[in-house]
Image (cartoon, rainbow, N blue to C red; front, top):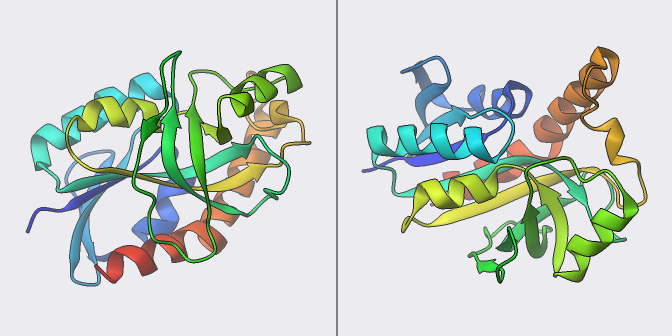
Length: 208
């Protein structure tokens, strides 16, 4: 049985899933194999941003030939009604200037369903947030677009947890050169994935 490839950007996002794997074993500095229930999975920490996600995702796909790819981690809300800690199951990807790319949403009870904007830089202004929301996106993130290109014809799913509400200041999420803000965000991301996203991901994949 081919594994499913699970991809998160940062180790604080992948660690809560790693510790839930049965019989985990490393096969590289960023890549682990294990299982969730009867489902074999590979877990990749790709790094932040679409370029790293595409490059490292493609390397893992070429090596493992996975049945499907799952992008998971944190996201920033673009609409009201998505509080911090809300789960978002992607129905599509808004990337570049083209039409949204449809995705099959993961069957996660309680998740908000909607399109994700996959961006190359932090969405740091209300104007930028509003522009993405106008294109139909409910939240934004930075890796799923790169993974969609790497996955090619394989099924891609995206399940995210909101770390920044629409009315918040997304500059608090990833502020270049400010180690205190980065540490705070990593602690927040770890708590959100541990408490909200990882249990939902494990429940879904373990039931397949």
